[in-house]
Amino acid sequence: MKNSCIKTWDEEERPREKLMLHGAASLTNTELLALLLRSGTSERSAVDLARELLAGSGGKLDTLSRRSAAGMAMTAGIGPAKATSVAAAFELARRLAAELPDDGPPVRRSATVARMMGPLLKDLAHEECWIIYLNRSGKVTCKEKVSSGGQVSTVIDIKIIVKKAVERLASGIILVHNHPSGNPAPGEQDRAQTEALRKAAAVFDIALVDHIVIGGRKYYSFSDETQGKY
Image (cartoon, rainbow, N blue to C red; front, top):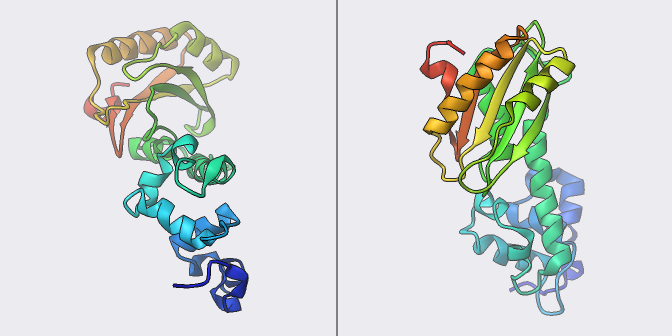
């Protein structure tokens, strides 16, 4: 077993020096986590702590990313400071994955929206509703969260959504929300709200292009299932 003090290791074995010499891709998941933790304890190195933190999530980064900072802080030697650093890194990764390109292509497929919004919504323990605004060319101009609810449902304020779309001069909108259960199949309330929003937006010549429900790694597209009605 290596000495708990990383400074005593050979230079090319130290995570920080290894990254500087060979790039971040050369590091293991454990070594990358160790850099986020920054330091260990008197008995265990940052690499030891990172290994234990990852092992507590079955060795899966996806599982670890869904743990709360408070939950990670319960691991011996981690504490709030280290846990919040790891949680912040995962949140940055989710936001990067969902970041809009400066001049992206028109949105023509539900899979494009699912890839954009999945990282933000798939692991939430509560429901959130987002609106994606499209210009006349079908390109995304912006996206924003319009409501947040409990584990079972969230309230969609149709008047607010249409008002925001009008203010942003949107030609089309895409409604996206998640099901924390992991099952993306829409319920009766989802169907009713979708139809009501479609009719309300149409009054202002704004098309409801799609309503996508994210459930874990799966999604449901109203447009796909209704042959482009929305």
